[in-house]
Amino acid sequence: MLVKTFGSAIVGIDALTITVEVSIDQGVAFFMVGLPDSAVKESHQRIEAALRHNGFHIPGKKIVINLAPADIRKEGSAYDLTIAIGILAASQQIKHEKVGEYIIMGELSLDGGLQPVKGALPIAIEAKRKGFKGILLPFVNAREAAIVNDIEVYGIRSVKEVIDFFNGEGQIKPVVVDSRETFSTKLNTYDVDFSDVRGQQNIKRALEIAAAGGHNVIMIGPPGSGKTMLARRLPTILPPLNLKEALETTKIHSVAGKMPRGTSLITQRPFRAPHHTISDAGLVGGGSFPQPGEVSLAHHGVLFLDELPEFKRSVLEVMRQPIEQRSITISRARFSIEYPASIMLVTAMNPCPCGYYNHPEQECTCGPGIVQKYLSRISGPLLDRIDIQIEVVPVKVNDLVEAAPGEKSELIRERVIAARKIQDKRFEEYSSVHCNAQMGASLLKNICIIDNDCKKLLTHAITKLNLSARAYDRILKVSRTIADLDGDTDIRAAHLSEAIHYRSLDRENWGT
Image (cartoon, rainbow, N blue to C red; front, side, top):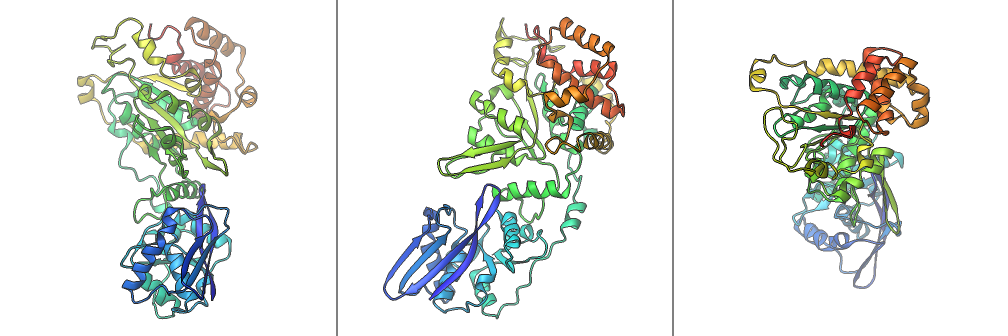
């Protein structure tokens, strides 16, 4: 007898429907074809033990299992339940009339229990698109999949529940999640706040500008100056995720298996802070079986690289494409996968190996030329993609004790949202540009128009402060964002002056 059941394979951050054809005929053999990997081939043993523990069995006949389409590699153990139900239906141990109406996914334990799977959200989206009645998957993944409306989602704890379901004996109720209520009730609930930071008003102002224009930031300062503390609070002042962005972010985390247990939707902007020992594939994605990297996991959020010069040079260089194109393409001989990577890059570093160059109180112990050598670990092309460069000076103890609590993130976020609305209107004709930081050279020329006095100021600043040529466009972008925060239609001299202040590392005499 031939029976077809259906599962899903993850390709990039999307799902592809997989047809599992099970044929049982005369003879004694077991064949699995359709490009399965080792984990899929091992399902035979898991299925046999799980069925035996629940009073069923794999028939001693010739069993051929085909996973179609055969040119897509099937990876992982999530096909256990799909194959097991196909075998039971083909051997007439359960009713087979309804098995083709559902996507069935789940890894089997030896006692018949179900382990969670990756990619529940894209699987549910694909099942709805293909017109399936519903999906059956492990109970842990049910709320994540149920965020998709107009499709039945059943959370299953064991293979016995699935068998009872298809035999019409079970009383499993579909999991229901109100996506809009879930989305709206968890917005802007952060454990940290900018009011926790005492002092550092100039750095807070720079981060507010960065958030308003989507600018990348590098903070340079000695240990203990608050760089990491400030960076961790940056997501709290970014505009809230909209529902589309939340779904995109959730899909990436779902595919990577990074969804917090019991969470149906990621509603906060991600903050990812990988250690400097991370590999190229760990940062941008890839590997033998490609997975999203930290850059994609930070999609629509913040990627924070602390101790920037300590990252391997090769790791930093692979960042250049995703920063510029806001996506990552992983190419292999037989396929190519694209992961989204629209991030704000925030980095922090010490000014020198000892950490105390330019410190107001501590003396730097580094020898001549050491500071420049340390900074040279970061390539010019990478620095070229960072709009705001700021020096962070430690707050004195007396000022720290006496300082009043800072401005709350909520108030700063309101100003950022107002500036982003101005940019949304400005770039409504450009589908690929959403904020000032994404402007190209031609767009910059048309939008960042300055008068003769501003041109003289900018020319004088570049000459006087020995700023490099690459600073010119960056200053214009940042000054446009400062003007948006002030609600001005034109870039004024005050906006340019403040933007020039945020190009510390471009000064050719810095560190000499």
